[in-house]
Every structure is written in C-alpha cells, then in structure tokens.
Amino acid sequence: MKRSFYFMMALLLTTSIFAQAQDQQPYQPQAQQPQKMKMPNSITSGFYLKLGPVFPVGTFATGTTFNDKTATPTLKLTYLPAKIGAAMDLGYLIYIGPAFANNHLRLGIDATFLTFSFNSTQPVLTDKVANHYYFFGGQKFGPVFTINPIDKLMIDLSYKLNANFCYYYGEWENYSDDRLTKYGVTYLQNEVSLSLRYRILAFSFQYNFGSVTYDNVSTTKPKDRTIDVSTFRVLFGLKF
Image 1 (spheres, rainbow, N blue to C red):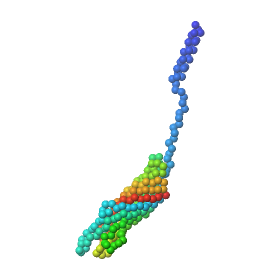
Image 2 (image 1 turned 30 degrees about the vertical axis):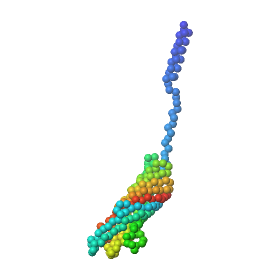
Image 3 (image 1 turned 180 degrees about the horizontal axis):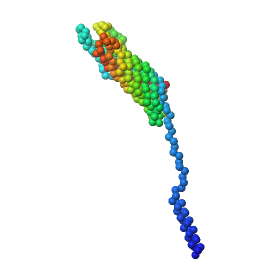
Image 4 (image 1 turned 120 degrees about the vertical axis):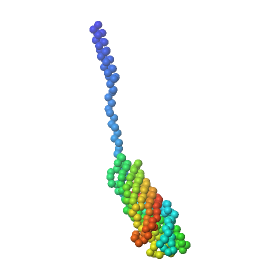
C-alpha cells in the first residue's frame, strides 16, 4: 500500500515537472539587429565648366521695335530677332553645411563667377552680309539643393540672380551715333536650373529670364529701350 502511494506521488511529481517544462519557452539567444550602414557623403564641392546652345524665347526671338518720336521725322529703332547662340558657364559649387538624410541631401551655393553667351541675328539690310549679335557677360549666384539618390548620381536644383553686361551689335539706318543705344547693364535677371551629374559628367537645363535696358549706362540716353532677353539653355560639361 505504501509502495503504491510512493509510486503515485513520484508519478504526479514527474508529470507536474514535465508539464511546467512544456509551458516554458525554450531559451533562444536574441538575434542581433543588423546596423544600418551609413551612406558615404558623395556630395562635395568643386569647380564646373559647361558649354552648350542657347535658344531665345518670347519676344527675344521675334524682335522688338521702338518708335523714337523725339526724332524728326519719327524713326523706328529695331532690336532684331535673336537666333540660336551659345553659352559658357565657369563656376563652383560651395556646400555650406553637412549632408543630411543619410547623406542623400545637401544645401549649398551655386556660384558661376564667369558666364558668357551670345545670340546671332539676321541682318535686314541687303548690303550687310555678316550676322550681328547679342552678347552677354557676367556672373550668377544663388542657392543649390543637391539630391544623391544612388551611387554617384547627383540632381542639382538651383536658382540664381544674374548680373550681366549686355551689348547689341545691330544695324540702324539713318540713326546718328548720339541716339544709338548698344549696351546696358542688368542685375536682376533670373535663372532656374536642373542639372544631372554622374561622377565628373554634367548635363543642365537652364531657363534664364529677364530684361535689359539698352541705355549705354547714361542718363542722357532714352530709358524706354528695354527688351526681353529670355533664353532656354542646354549645357554639357564637367564637374571636378
């Protein structure tokens, strides 16, 4: 009888221990969370050189005519329609703070310290066999926002203010030199730009818009000779 009692107690204890063991989760070592690799900062400052065609848009492509009522008889002063030209930009991308968003984004300054462009025109007078030109030279500065989505691919979004010296080599029949206005200076031209870069190669779309007053930077010249000089540019180049 006692033997049966001891056997039953041992069986009950064994069963209880086994049940508790089944309820407990087996120990599993906690897997280490993989650390997210930080992307290296590929958005760096450097020089760039870009060249490409310039396409006139708006009234710059159709020409502008002014009636000079101060002359006797009244004369028409025509700034000829601009045709396709070319441009060159030499500048430097200056990043003024650290990259963020895991080094995918960065802010800076797009400083084009030398820009030059020209557009040809078609002469009106039959005895003029050579084309005439609009010339522009100056500087451009503004903010740039760079996106590095993958590898060495860069997307630059920028806005710049332009300061330009502008010269028009045209033709005005029956006009005396004291009434001609061939050049002017502007500080308020604008440019919005989208650039794609991969390693050292650069490809840019630029919309340059604004006007210039051809008054020979003189208080004695007429101030109403303001024309639109907006252009669209496609530039190719290198960024070092």
